[in-house]
Amino acid sequence: MIKKAKYKGFLLILFYMLNLQNGFSQISFRPYNYRPTGDFGYVMKPTFSIEIGYMKSFVYERLRPNFSLTLLDMKPRMDEFPVYGVLNGTTVLPGKQSFQKYFIFQLNAGMDYLFWEKEKFGFYGGAQVIIGGVNVSYTDQIETIRQMDYDGGAILGGLRLSTGIEYDLNDQISFFANACRSVILVTEPTSLNWSNDYGIGICYTFD
Amino acid sequence: MVLGFAIHLINLTMKKYLVFTYIILLFVCLCSCRKALKDVNDYIPKVTLVSAIIQDNGSVLLTGSIENKSDSPAEYKGFCYDTKNPNSILDNQVPVGAGGAFTAEIGGLNVDSVYYFKAWAANSYGYSYSNVISLDSVMAAPIVPPCSLTPNTVDFGDGIIKTYAFVSQPTTSYEQISYTATTTNGNSVNFTFGSSLTTRTYITSSDPSPESGEIFVSTVSGGLNPGTTVYLNALSPGVYELTICNAPKTYSGYTFIFNSRCTFSY
Image (cartoon, rainbow over all chains, first blue to last red; front, side, top):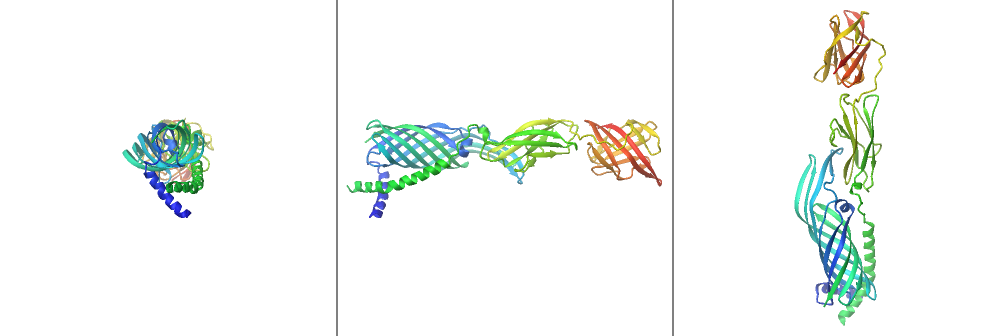
């Protein structure tokens, strides 16, 4: 009975995600601070951007789908990074790498779950799948062994976890603040980029 | 009603799993978080060339140190030097093993040149250079010959001390350096070194084209017997003094003892 319910539940979730006519919908506007970490944090500076989202409200159930998109204009932390190569295992060859352009476009889609609510406050967590692309221009050269210039696009994919708190001002408007941790795999230049982002936003609920 | 019941069941069943899974994922994400360093230069090793000291044998002992604020240790380190400043990591690169002391001894330097030394190190984020130390007049501590002769004199083995009146400008041919010293009465001695000039001992050779570390000394009656140690001191950049003490020379079946002390410029 429970297994059947779970199976049906999965189908219902899928149907629910696809059927945007059920329940109240929200549009969100979220300015946030994007902070690269790890190796990505060595290369790129933190930046600010805006995320526009569309989601269901938590009015009827605790699980809601959400979609959002955002654009990031990343700036490198150095004009030239002192890269190097190694010849024959011992000779170090000097080089340099520089980024002229690094734009990230992300489309996020996932689910949020309302863990706890009290009166007008709610605490939720979520997970999203990220797809998108980058527009990059960079040069990479190491004496005698590499000379590379790239200017073009590449695709990216990743995952994001979020945690947030929401406050309903009234039936239409609510505020939220959340923190996210994400990882994206970029195909050119190939890299696994980790980051945190922190934002506050406003939602408008409509029928 | 059926839809509401299904959703209620989902909520009940999934809540526990969702919360648990979410907490695990969040924990993993937080543990994997490596905050970016505030100063981008802290990712790359900070290198210092601590000292560059001329050794008694004329080589230079370099000592470096590394300060690393990032999580990536130095994978490669070493020194570089040249007579021009600035120089690059590729100029006379002397790699030092990743582990162990950060020192190297550089030999074969020219006493007439000014050298600029730097240390460098590289980790997974990049490489960096140290400060520069320059040295000139890189020469060994003087070596003391076992005899005391009057400067610029020669004894061909007949017991008569003659004075060198003229010393020619050394010439170079096939990596050999030759010069001739002539006495006031016209006797000449030719000296041919098999390698560059530096403060050190050389061994007499019977070969007019000596190897590195050898010297061919000849007069009108032939060369000195091989195997005698002679003493060359670099007095200052470009000025040398050669001392030969009690060197045997065989001529017409007789052995003469040759002594000479001669200063020349190169």
